[in-house]
Length: 125
Image (cartoon, rainbow, N blue to C red; front, side):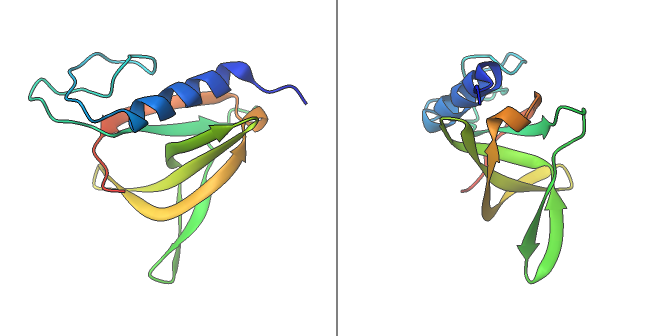
């Protein structure tokens, strides 16, 4: 099966940004800006929070466990992209604050038809 290069390239781009997010950066707004921002205060961000959509336009969600409680999330951080697979870190959003759940999921890039960039944030991973 042919890999969806548009989505793959975007996810790889986001992954590289996150891996190289050691420098302070300033703002602009869109998925392809060449740095993680958005602060003029000089805050360093290390994550571009994303959501994914399938070919039917449905938001991709996944389940995860927290303190033996089943929860779900549609927020992710790109950890790794390889061939047609993408490893995503599952994030939880509570009161507009994103936290790393300590869990990951692997998705087939060919099943993703849209990526929405939510915001750039600092997440303690």
